[in-house]
Length: 107
Image (cartoon, rainbow, N blue to C red; front, side, top):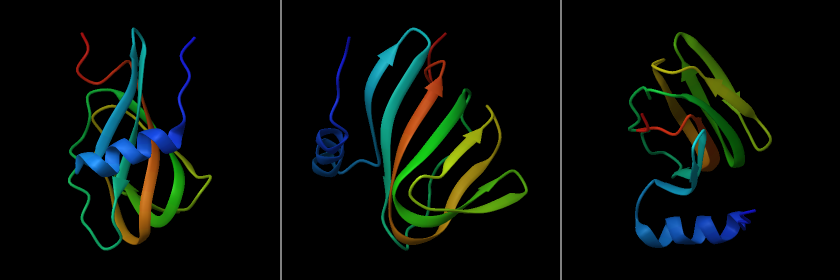
């Protein structure tokens, strides 16, 4: 078993100055925290793996392909591999739990 406190991961992410902090990587899955400040631009490019976002904090919109959706705490978004997607109109600092299956960059 592995156990994580999300706030500990968020604190590490804030101290790193990065946007993403992976905290679990095993054979079929990886999990991390992604954070975007209000008013910023999401720099993501499409990923090579399926991805799930769970909104922990904040309010924004996400464009997945040609679809737009407002997201808020409790929202869950599935993005298939290779599909263009970006968070935009970030009204409040956005903190997301991210799950890749299998892990991004794995073979």
